[in-house]
Length: 293
Length: 327
Image (cartoon, chains in turn brown, blue):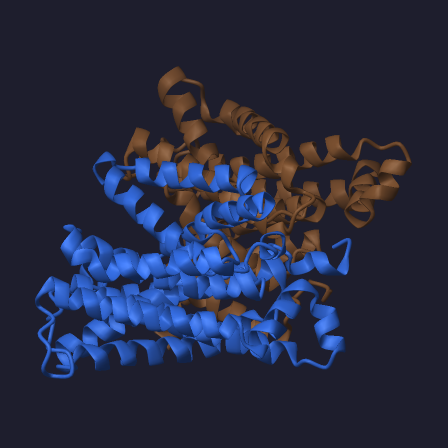
């Protein structure tokens, strides 16, 4: 088959793997966006910057304090998530009674500030990050670097764990109830404002986790988030933010499609997700998993 | 959405102040008088031309957010792509400036029709994300297409004679051309807002379901407004390319879409004159901070935060509100 298409299997599976990795990041980020949007009705434009903070967090802990990657993987999402909680308490909270657009504008401004500060500090060029699991396995048809396999497995576990928590646990049922009718849930004695704060922190933590995972795979640079977040917005438009599983499937699926486009028609690899968005908008305006309001 | 009206009320809070009134009219007359007399006042023409181009861009953007309640986060695609088209047509095909600008504007209108008919399929926050994604697609197209010159852009666009007779190599001659274009665009927007068509747009902004129930084909109105806004944004971009003799990726990147949002927000969404003030403020600030590296980005972000948290009416909206309270 590969000989027929004139594509070496190495290249094919290599790009498929890269596509899955990109898809893992799309899934983690769009999942966080969906969770935040569900409860806060805010599109978190800062998401990309918080992903970048995750990557830089791991880089700074490693290079300045010598703290290993595996500790960062747990600690950095908590730290960045805590910074998100501060933002929510200080700023976002005061905009909930206004039009959703103000939340978007505020978080866009915050993203500019964060990216600007990191650029001021670190410059625009990327910082290398030591691979925590060097080496790989030759599978015969392709070479599988261990760390890349780890990204895919780990992010799948996190995504499915999040899905399970939201869709199958009691805590998740509170969350889903508050998404539908915050006033009623509040009346039952649940502290909804605190829940909103923690949810924002959790979504931001997911973004930071994706950032930590991305640090060894890509270069760590201040603009890594802003480039990614626009693609993730397109992913969110394609999937619709109504469903957690929908976000995960759309994220991985689009990553794979993008990877395969790199094999068959490289010129379009940057734009293929946007093209798919256009097609979805024409055929199913509410998104693949969305509900038309 | 708790109340039917809250859907597109971003500018509704501002809207009560939007009536220009006699003070607003005098402000505008004073502005025009100043701009016409600018050469005598020792002003710097290139700076003024930049402000005028961005003011028109912001006014075009404001037509959507301020009067239809649609937040486009991708207006750079019209501004930047029209800049490329006019630069290319003037440089490679030998078009005169007026033809170059018209070609750019026509391209932006077609793009507006396509992008608009896709984006209005989704409401609110999704509309913003769709426009942003479409603009990013245009950005990548410009990055790869051969005629745009990639990272270099289209440089050294000649300033040809207007209508084949008026020399635009002189900065002040060019300045009056830009001023005329700006005023024409401004008048078109002003007329649109105060026409029956504009009233329907405002009705859609305030309460879309009710506008639908009254029998208005809301999507058609939205699309018309979108195309008009895109076209004028294209005029602004095409003019800017001829002024600076340059069309580059900066004009079409997402940061540019953010900047025009910022200008409009600072000046006052839903005020006719606000975007002009906002453009002047932001361009002045960029000039002032241009030597300080990333601080432009940081300060812009801080202005976003401060305006959204404290001055949602913007400069002109805030002044108008004070005046009304005083009166």
